[in-house]
Image (cartoon, rainbow, N blue to C red; front, top):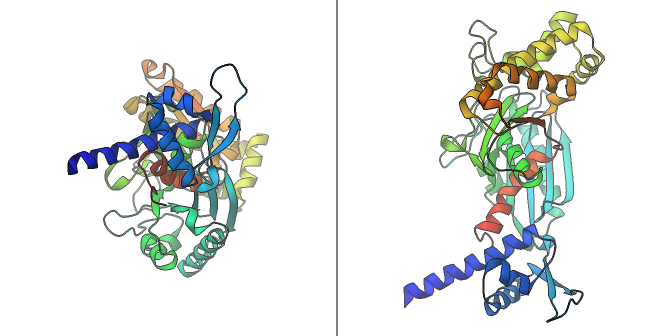
Length: 392
């Protein structure tokens, strides 16, 4: 008897999650249509919908226009019944959002960071950002907190940021301990590139069939691989270090301590360094991008060299993983369509022809808060598919 009750309980939870998942993808739906879609009997659906209404997840919005037969009561998910607080920590800024179950941003917060910021200043800025976001969210509706972070976090019980090239203030911070101490919650922690890949899956063009690779091009060069809408992880939930694969064994020394990494040629700091050496002065990446788009010959030579390196390394990924789609994102895309076109052209020239069939290479339309939203989507996924927060 005890096992039967347990199995019945598991089935009830699964049925409720199936209803919530369907409501996530529909604006409105009737109870009758729910029974048809989920192949459940009407009594079961009525009980589930009543329970969801009692807990504030679902609301009735009236009766559908009659087409003959029994009137259909329309219901819809109340997206504001639960909220997520999510932040991204990047070398240039901390960006935070409060978002509802549909990923709609209810509040946004941003703090720009200096390149020479100290660890203490970074922690203070992070705490202040999170406190402002929490003040705008209701604790009884809070699913949890999520953090997208630059740099590699260690596995195991502690989540300490290890090496973070160009962002030393972040190194050594135990984010899990910090959030537990300051906000009484254990956050979902995720690599920034994986977070952007999750944004693509949850909020992008939603075409997640097959294998896609996301390349995050900026201060560093990150990549993530997904198969049919699910991220493929390495050990310790790490995406790997594509930016620190060796492009030129006789190249420059990288901040990671190795020689000839791809990031020594094709990252934003590498481009800035090469431009400074050529022009004998320091200019910002925004200025570099503008001069490149105008066709300045000296800038073009530097940037095209970066595009060549990226193309060769991306070609290796194509030949190894045979993806259906490659998504380019990150601040390096400020260089414009010309830069992306060079990558597309050279990858198609270098890769095995059979692997190029049906391959698309696109620029993502991600916004600045995409990494924070991608981190927050972990909590949304748990809510809709695993029964997260069912007792709230």
